[in-house]
Length: 338
Image (cartoon, rainbow, N blue to C red):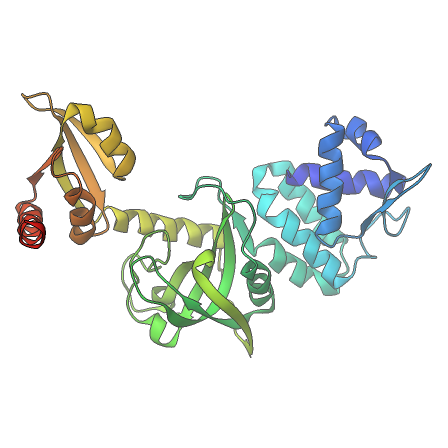
């Protein structure tokens, strides 16, 4: 749902009090089905929008005829800004509308509503394939982010064993339905940099020993049960979730490219090879017509595992150390199955 359309829906309902999906569709020049989905989404998010069945019915915004949002409860205001905030970056008009709604709220709710608006970033260009629904832990982590409480969970990184994590949750990222938590690690997890596979990222690109060195991203569908703790924390000054996520994502992409190899692949197998082996770039052809590719991965061990299955179709040209590793794999396979 576009944020500016959602705001327009609320403004129409404030002006009319009662509106049907067809009337809303005509007013906003959208389809009736889209108008109905928007109304249902507002209601499901906890915003006081309710259907009124029967002849002369429609949808009503609780508190008919009011011209501001002073009748919202704190929970309703938070629900509204959780829904609006991640989408407000889509246009200048949406951001302007969000600021106007924020000013219209009772002053006591504004800080919490503003925090809700900044709690989630929608990243439509993420690494992951779309998912149908968010993991159930997202709601708990939203609460931890908004209330600034520590959270504890078991976490299984892509290349490691499950371990308990305690973190200061700072924000949530929705990458086409696959969710990540951006958080500062606490205790043991604050030492070192986790390996990257779209899972958890060392947040300090320069490696300095400051607060950002503890920053990580955690893929939420790799978490176990989440516990929101009583202990509170202060959010870092001038924290910007959009900027932090961009830095973490760049770090992840850089770590994915830490090791590389040049490989010659039989032309007949090149398309299938590129489909199965990520991180490939075509460099040309050799004199025999084989396709020359650059292959990148987080480590040489990952390259070894990915390329070992292609011994019949692909030859590693460089680095020599990777050729030696694959030769050792060949000796092991020959000894075991020869």
